[in-house]
Length: 430
Ligand SMILES: NC(=O)c1ccc[n+]([C@@H]2O[C@H](COP(=O)([O-])OP(=O)(O)OC[C@H]3O[C@@H](n4cnc5c(N)ncnc54)[C@H](O)[C@@H]3O)[C@@H](O)[C@H]2O)c1
Image (cartoon, helix red, strand yellow):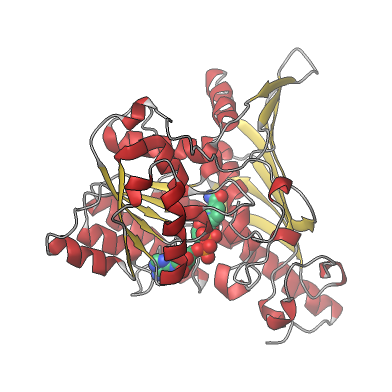
């Protein structure tokens, strides 16, 4: 999910929630071991959670590491917001993990403390700042380069998407250059939060493909948001989050790539229902969109289709359509003789499998699966040599997903511009 939900929304309308784990006696084998020194960048929804959805990076680190977690700093220019989040931490079962946490405006301030001997080099840097401020090479986007400069051995766990910058080609190229720097110089583990790859159902699907030596022939992804709950103006402003495919549809675009492989970007075509079209009028917006200039308003529905480089075909439908309750998300994957349907990844995730010899689906439930915990657990295991150290989304691969989502946006904008020209409709004003 995206962290675009309304903090006023009714919590029970969401599916999966971040685990509370506030039992003071929670003990896991992974709680045994040395202190785990960490810093956290970005004190927003993705890092510290919101009542509406399951994301909450800090909570998963707390559960995995228990009292071993030691958060030395929260880096966020919004001090009051970070302070409010830390105040809440006095209530969690690992409250001592945050006992001495300081709030700093930037990474350099923490590096200064380390240089002065007042703080340790972090074993891991958890990053959930807005992607406009990372994933690049400019002074306001070069966070990962800075992490590498100050702490070349520290592991990095960074939220998706790896960047959201414009113009698109500069941003995509820079994100790849960051990847090259990390690949060449950085010694710590790097993991990107494309969490849906860590679903048990996604891993089961992957295993069936591998066990049966299957080649995917088609993927069809559907990610329909309940838009009433999405009120963060940045999300609805094109130049901020760069549109719903890059910020949100990336989850499923990435999952299509996970099963279908690399995308032939030149094959891609896409269409959108734009905000200025009759069908683009949404009746239940949870905020005042009139403050956003017409040419900055985001498309409501985007449908893209493409060829994968191995010849398979893919389709993605992303929409701001539903009102209440959970998002409607489903991924279909096809291979010769097989149909897979991965359902409800943030709720009661399950995998439906139809195999050769039967028209019936085998339904594989994965109760209480938490992809956010799984990705955090794997990350910590990768850092410490634990049981399951598989990183399913590294930087370079995530950069390809970022490029893919930009290609979808570019294709849909091109077809919208062509339609306007055909119909003699002017482009929305600034
Ligand atoms: N995987 C998921 O399901 C999921 C869910 C929610 C958000 N996300 C991702 O997490 C990221 C953050 O989203 P969010 O909803 O938490 O945003 P948010 O706006 O709620 O929080 C971002 C925080 O970062 C701070 N910040 C701004 N500039 C900063 C900088 N230069 N350095 C450090 N902190 C800075 C802000 O003050 C704010 O407190 C986005 O990339 C989003 O796509 C992923």
